[in-house]
Image (cartoon, rainbow, N blue to C red):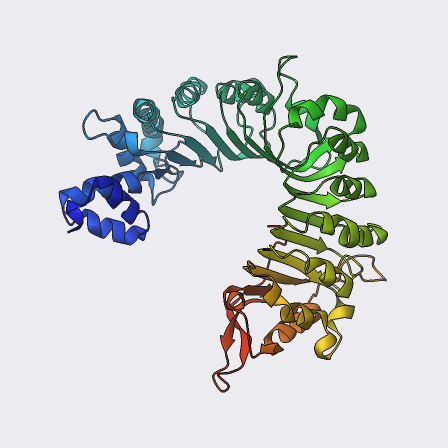
Length: 487
């Protein structure tokens, strides 16, 4: 029956199946094989430096370089893991070193890659995972990068864990070939080539940069745009900067013109001048999604200047003035109550930024919430009975008809003697876990059955109690420890 359906419909059906089922169906008949192959090959990986995947990667490269039955036209995303070298354990024996077998294998790999690249006519995304150049010659890597950047449909570049194996000029040369990209993600230390790529990508839509360099090596945000022509303005709409970036006041005026199209902004960087938020407000640059370390009232003033945010994540560092919490809950949040879908307010210390009765009243105005993540401090978690804030929040879940996930996170209390966070966080997480598990209700709304609740220790879902079918409670579906609070 399946082999008589149109190929487009078959591909739509197979896209919903598990990978193991794809492989089984490929053996059923030629029609199914022809329909499933494009789905299986949409994303492929090449990992030459691993013993387990070396031979499979070589076979793939040979197939891509073959003139017959070439699968290259189906590949849309290519992931290259580590380097282009064979496994480090291979060809290390004395005789191999005498006859330079490893060198000849590396040269053969270079040729296979160069022969394979022209067939990737549909490739849209290239991803370098834990990338390093290692034994590949400079001229070979230069040719590889040049051919990759020339692929007609390529618009996405992702680079992770760049290492400085060659002099800086070669790094610039390798990646400065890339042009007309719409999506750039770079993590690690590969900061030097970014301005060159941006300068040749006038249609850039998403830019994500995560610096992992030493805290002593700070990068100016303005330094991302020096290679741009005077009349050129970046069109980026989604910007993420994390790590050792800084945005001082003198850089704000020349940077703002490149941010006029922003709709999503994530700034978790070393330093942001208050004048940046004032400039965004003056220029009417109103983002719909915002993730930021909150440090001053200037950010809150910016958030009060407009409405329409759909996602907001605030990381509240220690030392942030408590009065800012009142302004956020009572003035900022009501401005965006009708549009807010995902809200994360993560405070690193107890206080008014944590969930309480006042914030709960403001949250109840956000009827379109889908995800809510808040912090419960020890004082509020320690209250017994129905007045406990966790119990009260769970009792109001029925008003959020679109809610999918609600997270209760614990604080890390300060050690007054040392001035540092106490290493153990056992009291707060266990207390929150007990409060969630003890909650019961008799008449839940339909939407409450689909809500997942999460704490530092576990994930829960509303289920009937085995001994009392008419009473529902949150039962653990998965135990875990949240390692990261930032989504």
